[in-house]
Length: 251
Image 1: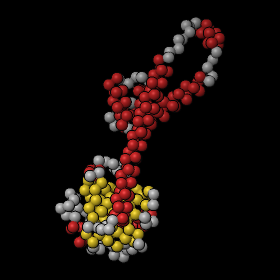
Image 2: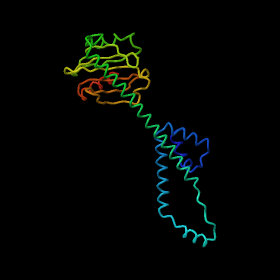
Image 3: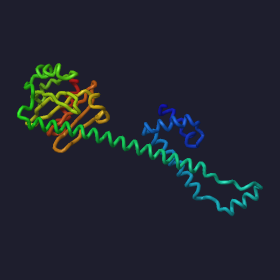
Image 4: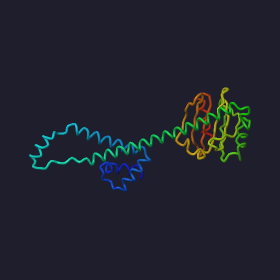
């Protein structure tokens, strides 16, 4: 079931008139789609607000009895079925929304953990007596060094005319996945650029893109061509963003 079909069935579902099989499909869709779950919750809240507004001016029992006698009809019986059904729907939607929020929070924590690991790798490189395995400012020397050592290839940017210089590269491992760590320098600041296969990180950063600031470091991350790029350094956010643009253009 897609979002259009789900929203088309919304009113019938809330009124308890949707076929059971169709209702189960809709409930399954809501559990996996926070947007539709939010739409249903808004509709439930609207119905409850309308019902509350109508109850605010409910006629007294004496008035209803008098009007019933005049009309010569039996007093209607109030049904709690729809009310309790609405409460059940509300509880279901609150549970679905809660699960969606928890899931998003868990994904965020996983992403933050991976970025923290990348920052730790950067610190280890800075502290190492041999920070690079291949020392060269020539991208045509650094890139071929990784061939046969990692299960993918990548492109390095042309740095001519920029303030960046390539120091070299080394092997890196994140979640036991092999990747490349490239060291760039700008105004005495060293920046690590990690490149891994996106699928090798088990979707840990699949929903995370953009810049952030972690401790003393600025970071940037994005996916491109099946690869995950993570840029970490103590340079300014503007320098991190400038290097990221060069890498994206080369990729």
